Image (cartoon, rainbow, N blue to C red; front, side, top):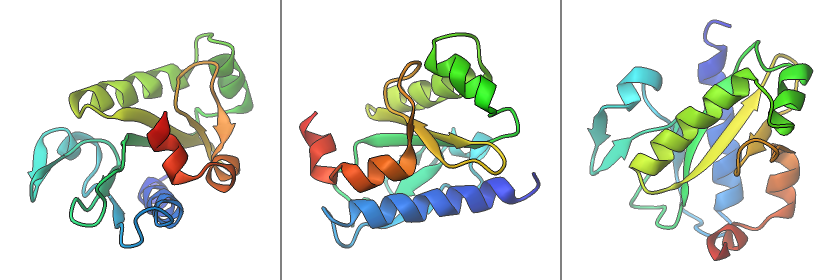
Length: 148
């Protein structure tokens, strides 16, 4: 997929930023520089870079999530169905990685994933909890996630 995963991370950062700005109009979201291994061990201006999306702590004070983004060929209709049913799936590994990063940062996990030519899907609770990201962003207000 070459550089497609970088583009995917920028795309999701923009979607999340637009959605979150209802609550914090100046919020700035960006993909973690280098992502992956670099992000597991570096700090940038007062915050640790874990996950695939960084938020500017000067403009975004309430963001509760550690976001992991996966754009992989292994995300197929079958692997999504298996994850939804709690069965063995490559998405289980993505979920574990997301939860590990979230736990280290005392945040909630937010896994966002898709395969080729598929819409973005997401999970906030793990196996059994899969939804279309667009549906979530259109139907849930940012303030609602802070109340949970």
